[in-house]
Image 1 (cartoon, helix red, strand yellow):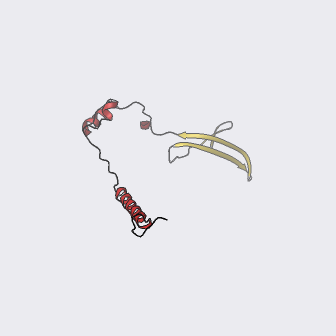
Image 2 (cartoon, rainbow, N blue to C red; image 1 turned 90 degrees about the horizontal axis):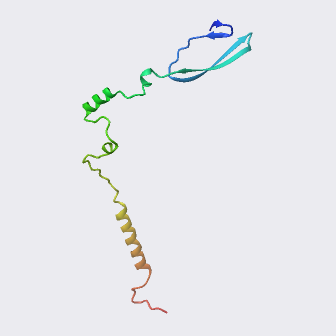
Image 3 (cartoon, rainbow, N blue to C red; image 1 turned 30 degrees about the horizontal axis):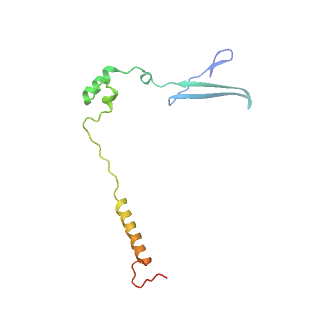
Length: 122
């Protein structure tokens, strides 16, 4: 690091990615820590990502190329435009429930002697 003023030092460090970083500088003399300093540095994203206003010309060109529209109303955005959606529901439940119900009725008729000729109430 080079000294640029009393107690001020500068260095250039390559940063491989964007974001906020914390720095820690330690000055040692004879293996002993003499001074320690902490700081923060921000490596901002490129300026192209900082544009807050929409590029209307680019959006219009994209809409024309893809068959879309620029600045549609909320109602038009959610309009299906004649498309229909199909919902598929599993139907395996109904035959299984029917089979379970028939099994319970069969079990009831076999175990409970309602229609047995030899059955005499006491």
